[in-house]
Image (cartoon, rainbow, N blue to C red; front, side, top):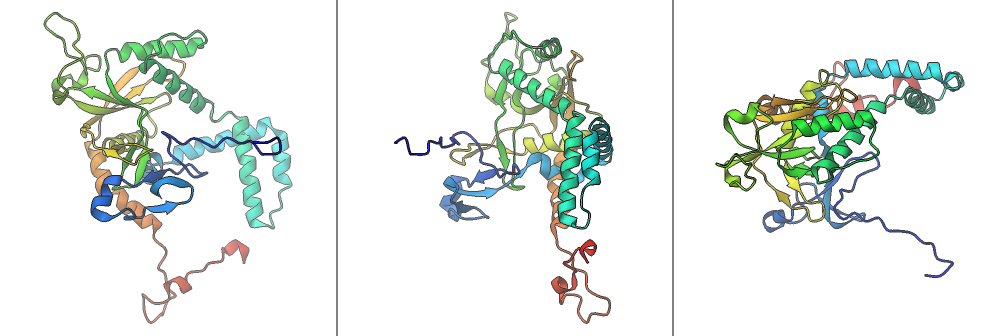
Length: 342
């Protein structure tokens, strides 16, 4: 390389999932499928930006299940944050007053940008960002780190409560990507942990442990006598959106471990009856483990959501009244120009 060459670092995607600018993941085809079906089956294609093999766009777990989400309360809250931000930033109100409404597309983009800035001014993502920070702290603890010197008092209280409640838990996987090829989804559950069956499922402090004759915990018991359970950490409110949480846990439980470098899937023995929410509300210094029944959510995922998504993705088949055939000219009959632009 000479002084006249442009110096750049090539991004290393080892161990990572490639994504679109909107966050949709590219998932590699399972190499095991080649033996039976060939490398380009089921929508997987070679892409210039994906040198590791045939890939396809999958859907994020949270996006896939959102078709059944009740967003009324969330929408009301977003509107309140927008108004609050406008009250704190008079320049945004002035900017909105200057928007040219004669250009529909430009006006929509401009007003959307102003609304986003208003919500940012109201710190609408503050709690979500704090929650992400605690997820990172909990992951560091569960992967071996034990001391922190610069944590805030709130974060320390949350961490100590989390440690006390999850004492003795053994994790098979922490923040590992998983795919479901039937639904074409990708997501990352917080934890997959070992549990035993039976009556201990409602005693979180003891699940995942076996006590030997000398009273000590034996961490080398036969894995055939235990299975995995999905556990997700929540730091916000859980009274809103609990149905979506159940569907999210259920879809993780129906997924397989995914290697982003090879595309290899690994099926796991995951509990399809129960999952867990580890609720650590920010700033309260408490932790509660909720045992969540997910059998009904599993059934909804298998029977209802695919039908709802297919229904929403279809194109309109309306025809003008009096048409000779109800199946002719569907595309031509549907107006393609937005009414506001006429």
